[in-house]
Length: 120
Image 1: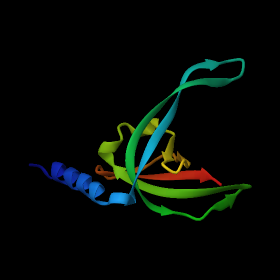
Image 2 (image 1 turned 180 degrees about the vertical axis):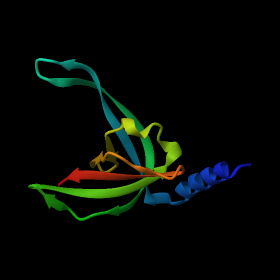
Image 3 (image 1 turned 30 degrees about the horizontal axis):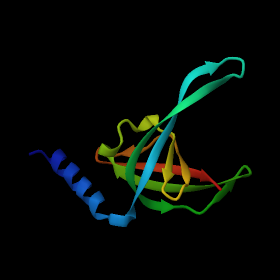
């Protein structure tokens, strides 16, 4: 048995044992079916979704920049929960809050750290 399998099982076990600290969320991505050259925009149709569990590490106080106020939230989830991550745009929490996934994320091969933003 290799260490990779052992660590993956330990990560899964840790996420199961955090109980109500883990939130069930929905990853979403709008799919473009075509491009409207007259309106100069993509025509969005279906939405691709996936449900995963995340743990919120921190949520920063709202910050204003250039007249826009937004909050930042940092979450983690096991790598095995998301494949591939880079196709998703937003995360919806069970309270109805929709957060945007910022470009780029950190992964150590076992856990992914995502930075989310939300307008206030």
